[in-house]
Image (tube, rainbow, N blue to C red; front, side, top):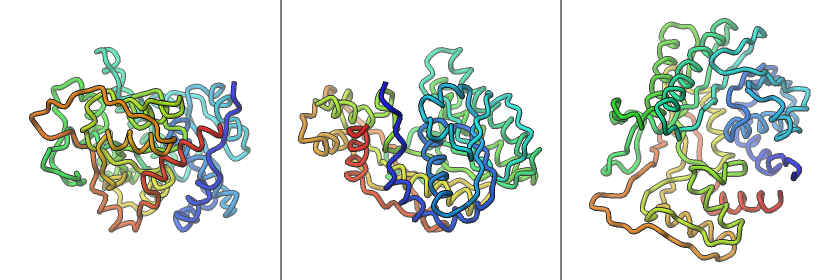
Length: 346
C-alpha cells in the first residue's frame, strides 16, 4: 500500500493567503465538522490545520466519522494531530457533549442511489442528519452553521439559462424518485432556514457545483476524475457520452476559500453558489486533461443525436463575488495540471 500523502503544501499556503482575514476570525475556536473525511471536508480540515500552523490560531477540530480506524489509515497525518479529535458516530444519531463554536455540516452521502431502499436511506440520511446537527449546534449554543448543499437543488438547468442564480425558481420534479438527493438537499436547506428564523442557530448555505483537485475520486461518477484516471493510465481519455454536456470546474483551493468566506461572512438564511464561471463542454474537458497529461488520445464513444440543447450545470456566482469579495484564482488548465502532478507524485 502506498503511503498516504498530505495535500500539496503550495495549495494549502495559497488558501491561507486567500482567506487570512476570515481564518483569523476563527482564532481559538472549536469547530465541529461532519463529512470531514470526504473530498470537501478533507480539504477544509487540512487547510485549517495548515493555517493554524502559519497564523497561530489555536484551533480545535472534531471530525465526525463512522470509521475512525479507516480514516487513521487514509489520513494518518491528520488523525494523529493533537488538534484533531475523531468522533465515531452516525450523523443522524451521534452524541457529542463538548460545546463547539462553529459547525460545518458537509456530510453528503452519495447521490447515486439506484434502488428504492437506497433512495429512502439517502433521503433519511440527509434530512435526519441535518436535524441532528441542528439539534446539537443549538444545545452547544453554537451561533453559526455552514451547510454544504448542492446545485442539484435547482433541478435540471433550463436550456435558456446560461448560469443559474440563487434566486432562480427552477426545481427538481418532486414525484421523480431519481431526484431523491436533490429533494433531500432542498429539505435540509429549509430546515436550516427554519432554524435561522427561530433564532436557534444561524445557518448559511453553500450550493456546491463541480470541482477538481487532489483527492477527487477518480473511479466514481465524476467525469473529470475519470478522465484524470484514464490519463494516469496512459490513455486514451474516454468520454462515455457524446461530450456535449456543459460544466464548469472550480479548483479545490478556491472552493475552500469560498467556504470560509461563507462560514464567517455569509448572511444567515441565505444561499451562495460555489463554483466556476469558466464554461466548458465535457469533450473539451477531456481534451484538456489529455493535453496536460502529455498529448494523449481522446475517445468519444457516444453519438450526438440531440434534438434539444445540451444539458448544463453552471452556476452564476455573482452573489458570492459581490457580497463576499471572493474570486477564482486558478484556471481550469492549471487546476488539471496540479491535480495530475499530485497523483503522479503520490
